[in-house]
Image 1 (cartoon, one colour):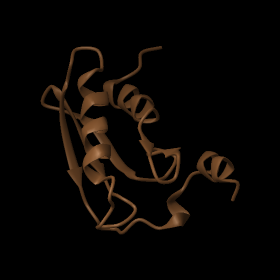
Image 2 (cartoon, helix red, strand yellow):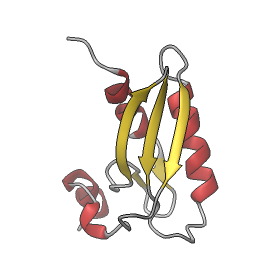
Image 3 (cartoon, rainbow, N blue to C red):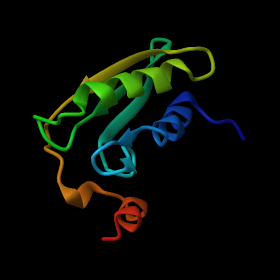
Image 4 (cartoon, one colour):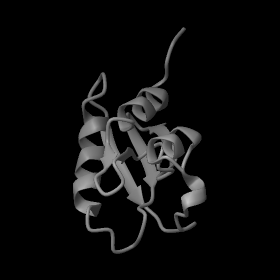
Length: 100
């Protein structure tokens, strides 16, 4: 079974944690889209708030996670607040980690 770069990226992003919540950004529901594009990986994501104090830390970690994938793809990380993040976006695994 072959795994595509977007799947590898999603798995890699499970190692990037929201430092305030202690849950990875995939299970926090912060990742809206991942796509292989022009030899790179485009990630469309959000943050828990527009004033997120960990924004730059999370962004650098996402870029590093993508750049460290096989073939060293170029990361293209785009932050959006449309739609805005809500706690309902947290996955079942994330809820279990948060004990919700």
